[in-house]
Length: 142
Ligand code: ADP
Ligand code: MG
Image (cartoon, rainbow, N blue to C red; front, side):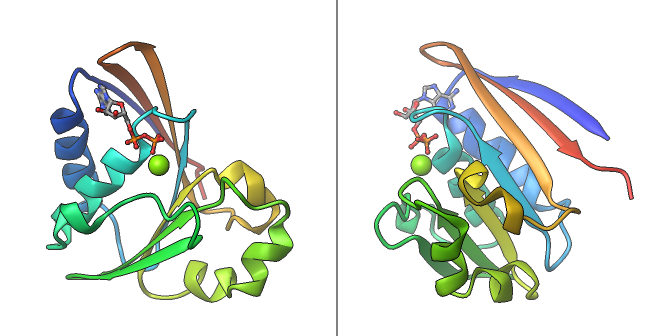
């Protein structure tokens, strides 16, 4: 499965995140790939809104490594930017989150790639110009 779309404002990215989360089941893992400022956290804000979580509460857990939000489903938000190795993620119990019942979303998943469940959904975000963001969503076929 592969799906592509483009957004032209932060609000549109939030709206897409909200729409996207409605398609997820409990326990899914979503990887968000893109440079700093690509819009990963805005997309997570939308996912949070879709689960009934106040999106103002959502920011990159760059220092805390993980934020947990309680909505219609639990939302686990990882930011692995500062992780030096997958071991650090293991130490904070990443696998319990990834294989738990909540929805997990991960910024900078490439830092901990060996730990990512094979059935995860990968979303890459590119920024061709200041306000445009191109999203490609891939889910490996079972
Ligand atoms: P990341 O988490 O990938 O570092 P953020 O979501 O924190 O990115 O920030 C994205 C930045 O890009 C914000 O400053 C936002 O205002 C800006 N931006 C401009 N256009 C868009 C868009 N179409 N979608 C998302 N963010 C956008
Ligand atoms: Mg971010």
